[in-house]
Image 1 (cartoon, helix red, strand yellow):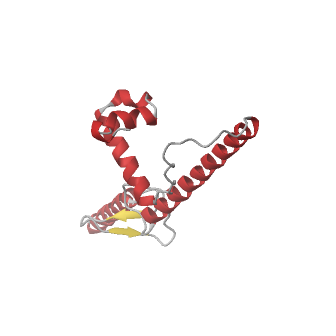
Image 2 (cartoon, rainbow, N blue to C red):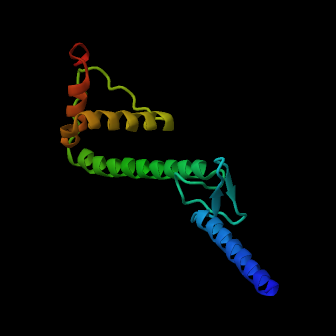
Length: 152
């Protein structure tokens, strides 16, 4: 009788231990990290990035930001190169015209990454308020947004 009670007790303990192990494994996300009840993030040594918004190893957000900046710089370079290639044949085909008597054009400056982020944020806010403006060109948007006193 006591042997069977002890056996039932042992089986019950083993079942509870297995269930506790499964619940811990269920808490681990695809990156290999576990978030504790206190909100702390505990990651395995082989944890990887790839779970934005969830518990992930340190440095993943900075790594994503660097990757995004590299992609943005590469696309910007491609666009500039495409503009140069398209502008060159037009200039060669047409004769050089006399310089216009208007004011000298402003020099073009490269935007910093902070300025680019701010521009994207402002455009998102503007398009959220004016969804029909998404189909307008940049020049038309500039004329619509710019105050009348500053228009040229």
